[in-house]
Image (cartoon, rainbow, N blue to C red; front, side, top):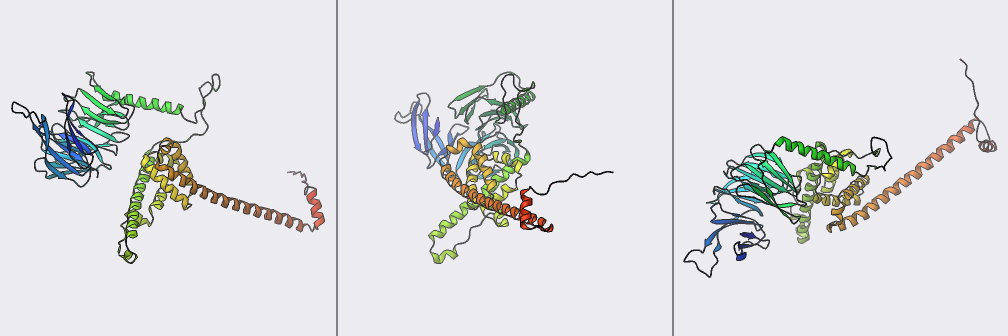
Length: 495
């Protein structure tokens, strides 16, 4: 068994004796992937040091075997240098190609014998975490942190289908032998079975209580093994019973309906009644509720916020690098340092990163804002909190800042309080938001006092003008005010 470690070592174990045979310092960085050749005569490793290394097995068996050497050892044959960290490597079953997944979200395919470049598979928005090639070497399936699974043709590199497979990152994918059926697992705790020709989900399996990180399919496809963050390894065995996809879809719809009923019962605005109370139709509901319905518009709004945050974060990094360069350059050479190239969108709007994010958020309709914020992953929530602090410093749309802040704190409370990096941001945000609210409170109080003064002046002038028309002196005016003013008279109108 070959084991790659975070320290860059490659360990060779003998299963029969449960002993460590060989330890090799294979890479300078973490080894993320190991795969054995189809002919079992070698292996390939991919690492964070941006290198792919090819190894051959040396066997020390037979009557002439040297007793001082292990039965099997690894010998380095070739090294392929890449442009970015290597996350996954895979041989094609026919031995013709080797696929390499990089941190830049692309997959490079090379000829195995000459290591000449053959194909580049580009389409994922986030890095490819795992991949597998079908037994006939015609299809390659990739899974990514962008929650998608893509099926590619290995002949021309065309994308046959892109599937939104899981609600969280897809961690592993594996084909069944001699078929185009494949399995996927993800951080959403689901194990899913797919048809690679019809591009449809066959079955969903729920059993783990934590993120699923590992997946292995048996040689004959009779069972599947998964490993999870919940410290359990589960074996899923295939049965001889027939499976009807329509029935699976109906069962999923029923589960969604039941889950929606349970969620409605657990809502904060659900008012339970004691036995004998309420009407005969059951418990009563709160008169007003929050509208929460994910639509295409709210999902698109969430994508717009994430895109704006990515643009702003990249622009902030560029400006920080520029300022660091300026700090190291002598004052007389500052003018010679070229200005950084900013994103085209920021240049077109003539805005900095925080102002652009504020523009995007303000453009979202108030009824869709909360649903759009629910789409954001926690990493983007941390970034958004930083921009909320900058908006508070500049006193920009304080009501919007308060609304977003309260919603994020209510939704991500446990993650925020357990994140150490958020402490400084929250302390600064509390200080600056309080100052902004105090300034607005003072301004509102001043305007309110001014309006009250204007009203009093208007009433005084109106009363004075009324009594001046009746030619009354000051004594008569005071007497009229003491009597409560002019009494009303009844009149009768006849047709």
